[in-house]
Every structure is written in structure tokens, then in C-alpha cells.
Length: 405
Picture 1 (cartoon, rainbow, N blue to C red):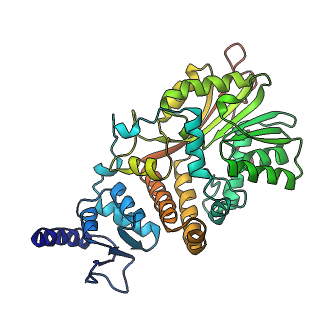
Picture 2 (spheres, rainbow, N blue to C red; picture 1 turned 180 degrees about the vertical axis):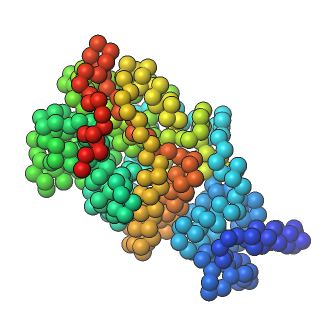
Picture 3 (cartoon, rainbow, N blue to C red; picture 1 turned 120 degrees about the horizontal axis):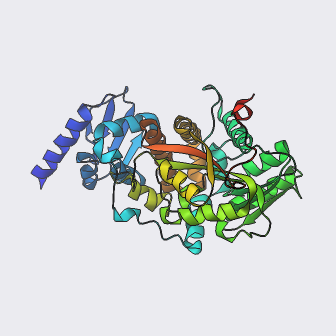
């Protein structure tokens, strides 16, 4: 046993020795290997069982070991992900996992979807407030220029969506998965629409309602605790937005999802679907244990598809796709903003949600930023319309209305 353990230790040392950044390693018995004051990443193994995590690691297994406190890792998240990239073979981190049982996430009953959403979002409003922008917009920002701060970039994103939807005063807007109300409050306050936001999170609903009153938008903005499948179809909407919610729909429900949206739209109406997609065709998720880690710890019930499936499902439901834009680099940049803001307030975060959940959020967001930067994930805005006689009657010939200052 001691001989086997010694071989594993030598393998761990060999792997760390080839890293591009200085690393220090401390064993459970106090013994140290390499590194010193110049170490950018410090690793502590909290028992012999942690050795296997580093001997043949995947990004998913390393994330689990960190969250379960088998190992402690100190250093900036960017450097930790750089080290993880070195330790884990690329094909174990980004190849497609066709047919994996872990991606059988199509069982999206209404009760299960609500439970999954509450697991992720009903953590603590104060926790999200530590690292989100002032509007608490929990989706990809839009950096019109690279030097924008997070607040300005999120405001630019809200305007980007509103302009793509060509919002006009007096129109009705439905926001499916409205979060803490950022889009509906912005659209009502700046574009003069009447907006309904729906969410499955009690915490989000309560916060958004408080903001409606604070901004004196009663009568113009409504927030309901409601599944998108339950929205009444008697009163149709001029425009519909779905931002950061699409990932929860499930591949087998895409047809139902877009068919429901089409029924809710007025003839000539527009829908903006903004969501994370996989970069791989026929994707079932990311390999190396990443998908299982996300499903177990972060987003139970989530599922990613390729952007082509989004367009196909929308078109099959009778919606005309008018514009598609990939904001992949914007989401990597957004996530690094979130990670750095979370790390800057880590003591407060730990007091609010505890050590394990802090670790989950830190490694999940850093890993996601890394995945967007590597091109494993993408973020697509797909704009579609409910035609009149099969075509969209009044949508502009150019994108000038979207990119105007």
C-alpha cells in the first residue's frame, strides 16, 4: 500500500512539475512539495484519498474534490483554471458525450422544473447582490466596448435586447424567466411598454415586486410566480423575451416551448430567445465529469443544445428567424467579472451561504468562463417573428436600429 501511494505521489509531482505557473503542494501530513512565496496556486491534500483526484484528474473530478473539501485550493480563479487546463487532457474536458445517461434531462414536469429553479435561485438574494450588477441581471452582458464596467455592460445588454425587439410605447412585453426584474423594469421605464415577468423563484418574484413599487411602475409592470406553460393565451403580446431561461427547457420540450411562444404572440410580434448553447453538434454535454458536476451541484435539470437546434425548433413552430448573434466572448468576460467580484467579497459570501456553496459558485462560474473562452460553450440571441401570411411585415431592412448610440 505504501509503495502504491508513493507511486501516486510521484505521478502527482510529475504532473505539477510541468505546469506553466508556480504551484505549491502540501500533503495531509504537513509535507510540502515545490512552490514557495512565488506560488500562484497553493494546493492542500486533506487525506490520502485526495491523491487519486490529482493523479488522473478531469475538470469535473477536480471541481468535486474542491467542493467536497478533499482538497483546498488557494489563488486567483483564473490561475486555478489555467492549472486545471494543464492537468486535464483536452479531450477529457471538451469532447461531446453522446448518449450519456447523465444527460437524460428531458423529464421536465412543471413541479420538477420549479424545484430545480428554486434550488439554483432561492439561495439568498443578498448573496447574488454581492457580485451581480446593481440591477441584478444574471445573464450575459454586452460589452459595446471592452473597457465597460459590469453595470454599464448589463445596461447595454438590456438596450440591445429592447432595440432588437423594436419596443415601442404602449406595447405589451412578456419576459419568460424574468429573474430579479432587470429587463421588464428597464423596458417599462425607458421604452414605455407594459410588461409581465414570470419566474419560478419566490426570492426573485419578491425582489422584483419590491423594485416595481420603488420605481413607481405599478400598473405598468407585473410579476407572477408562473411556469411558461401556464401563461394564459387569451391576451397575446406584442413582444416576448426569454433571457437565460432557455437552458432549463429541455431538448424534448423545444417544440412545445416555441409553439407556446407562437400562440402567445400577436401576428407580427417578435420574440428574442437569449440562451447558452453547446458548440458541439449533436451535443449531450461536456465530458470529463463537467456535466455531472453541474447537474449535481449547480443546475439540476439543465440541458444545452446546439444553436442550429434552436433555429430549427423555432422554425418548426411557425416562427420566422430574423437575426442570430453569438455573444460567446461577452459571456466569458461577464463571468470573469462575477468571479472576481465574488472573490473580493468571499468572507461575506461564506457567512451568507456557507463554505461548500461558496466553493460551488466560485468554481462553477470560473469553469464556465473558461468554457466560453475555449469555445466549448456559446451564447446565442435568436430573434424570430410570428408572421402575417408567413412573413414578418414591418421588420427593418437593416440593423441600424440595434447598433445606434
